[in-house]
Length: 295
Image (cartoon, rainbow, N blue to C red; front, side, top):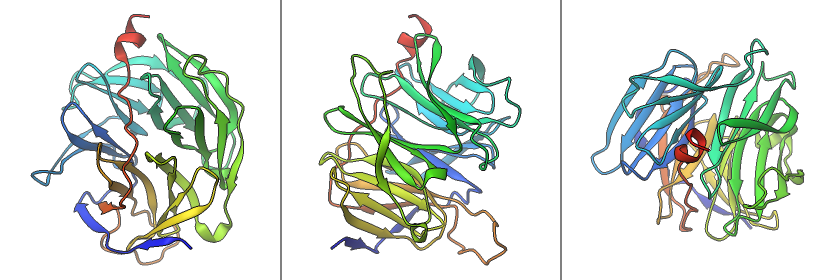
């Protein structure tokens, strides 16, 4: 039987249109996340409860802290390098400039700081791909992706989990830090439509994955054998992604406030939430910018 959490708190009143991609920045000891449609990158200080943001010219699908006190932003046409305030942004890798309408979406680093980043089109057409980004170039890992979304690894780095939201499932593959491009996905968990749409995810120290469900008002945890073990019942409907604070069991959850069906939305929609789930999260590495810029 799944353990249920209901005591979810609003951490920050971000009021995002499409909040996404929470990540803990170990350099600043703060949470970063994006509003894709609002074209903003947020920084939240959990000690002072101060929320800051900067605007972006394009839609940021993800914000990735680097090992050189900077951000890499996954945006419409590629990866951009910027400082923590969003100034002096520059394109460092163009991606899918030949596919009009495509943009970058979720992105995350493996334990060696190599970036996996996906693209998507209109949300209905499989025009996107998943890429491995290292040594100044992008290698295509998976084609015909509709909505490239959540990424996570097992604690021993031997399993890679991936979500293409259109498949209503989590895929998995054997993974090797020595040969990261050798990936062959298979269906790990398939979800009924009643769960909503699987979106972002993260993993914990016990090998479980936490999956956010857009339109499902919940985050669900699944063990390494695919069994559902925990459910976080959310006070809003559009749940997009989640991330742990390092060395803790505090889970931060992003949400959206999109007027999709013309139904009234909760006044809390689009905020950043937090809940203690009692299981310590798995750390996420910073992007190894040194490796990328100077292969």
